[in-house]
Image (cartoon, rainbow over all chains, first blue to last red; front, side):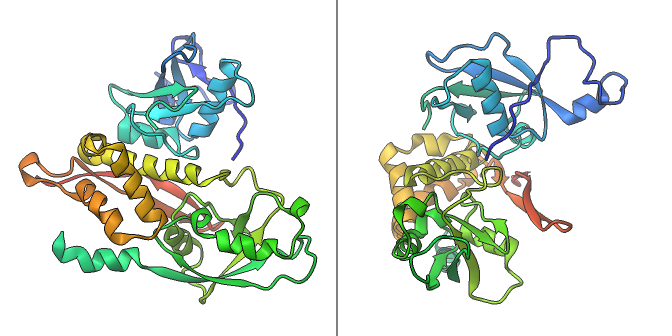
Length: 120
Length: 211
């Protein structure tokens, strides 16, 4: 399935949410709609300059994968593998919010990414 | 576990009688007859439909054939959902045999994952097993198994070998009481969107097991 790889929100920046969203107090609506994702590179895969991202719960793994590929300026024929718990690859159509609920810890979902199969 | 063997066998050997019909707009050299097949509920469409492909390829030219995909009443069928799940979601209220339409063109990129080979199905299957064990045993059981054990799980499914499969799967389904049992019981709940008839994964719920 193909998705548009829209940009994600970095957690470090103190930006208000996107203009289309109504203003919230203390970002409570944000906390419900977005989750924190920490991206970790495996092996000699390039490390992303920004590792912590705030991602909408409904975003799919495939969409996130496409975003990382673009961010790392990967070639079209290069593959990217995403792992949860350094053990399994989630289905590309899985929503990150669901993964967070099952496998998140310390308020974030840690995902490892690699250009080759790491924990196949 | 021994008492459940009958149930396990019934689940494993569940079959859905299916009629495959070529999509009317596909280009054929002569008329394509429908193809009938008993589909295993526990398997995946792309794993068990080689015969379907061969049947329709007999009446088509190679240049008119791209990746095969299926739809039911206009809804593309996700091959990465088990066959039994697809049937229960889409067609449980319809008469048997299940009527599936076969396509070789216009792959619906937005709805379906590509499936270029059996190794893709194997990777998806093994990832599901690992995800479940992450919840059940913090991945300890699956990680303690050797690569050949993982392979045996897959081969058992691929070749419809109940004993071969369960020789390995029982390790994943055991919950030693002295160790507190499963940490969490993995469930996947699929809800059909009543308005549009589109199924989606509502939640991969985890249920803490009783101690």
